[in-house]
Length: 228
Image 1 (cartoon, rainbow, N blue to C red):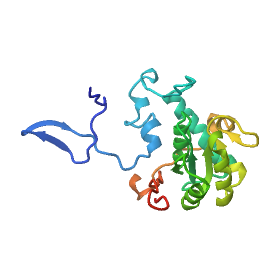
Image 2 (cartoon, rainbow, N blue to C red; image 1 turned 90 degrees about the vertical axis):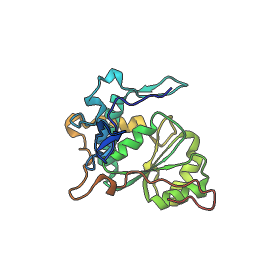
Image 3 (cartoon, rainbow, N blue to C red; image 1 turned 30 degrees about the vertical axis):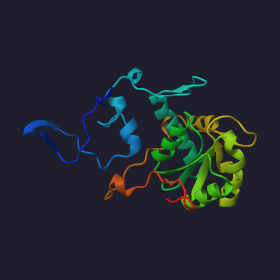
């Protein structure tokens, strides 16, 4: 069964024709909108939250524990997270967050939290060993590393090799003594109140969204080191 989006097609080429019969004017792809604004800015015509009731928009669910983060909560959590990163950990536009994790509902929160304030997200395979993870962190010039308890042995050693201090290693879920958790970061961000939240990054004048790096990905590295 084919499921079609309720939103109009995206196409910068203008009208579409089939057998000389006019079909639609496709929606132009915006060049001045960030990923975060596309998803969450209620004043944006592209944002699902401006089109549909929150109850109709899906979220993320942990199939094992049934823990769930709704789409509206993702917006709230990414706002709190980005505020904590900027105000407490000197995270700035263009800085990189490395995500070294298996699947978790907190992965998109971490990813979009960094993106919200103009950060760069660099994902890493949870199968990386210390040397591979060290290379990834150094190459991406990561300032912060987010990981899981199951990956801490590799994460801590690789972070040390890459010059990332312990207080910049965060846990997406679970707890390990001496390390800050995602939920603690959210509490930090929440403590600044509604007026103290950091404003979302905007595309600078004279640039388009394609000119701003948001995701720094690597190849699998099947033939030597992983490549950007």
